Length: 99
Image (cartoon, rainbow, N blue to C red; front, side, top):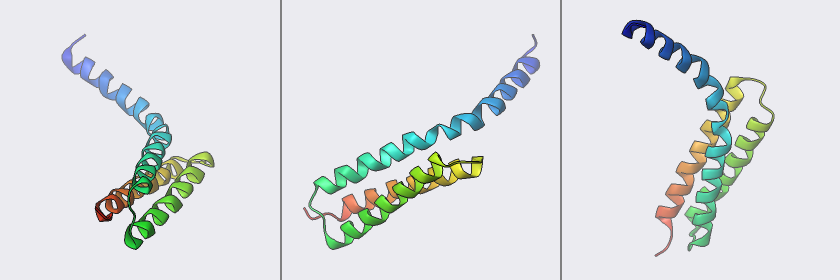
């Protein structure tokens, strides 16, 4: 097989395998968000950090619902986006915690 043919086959495999793999990313990102939220909750929260954590918890619930009730790739993408946003909020809450 020539290099060009091998590259074409590799690209085809990536294109065919990548979309389903993204669908399975939802639980991983949701779990990461839940773990970071739990870590932030163990610290000394401030009113600002508690508000961020509440928003993060809400987004994780929405992400889980999007994933569990997914009917299309868009639903999985929405779940991942919400879980990643929750991760960002939890990280910010950690930074705002009292020393």
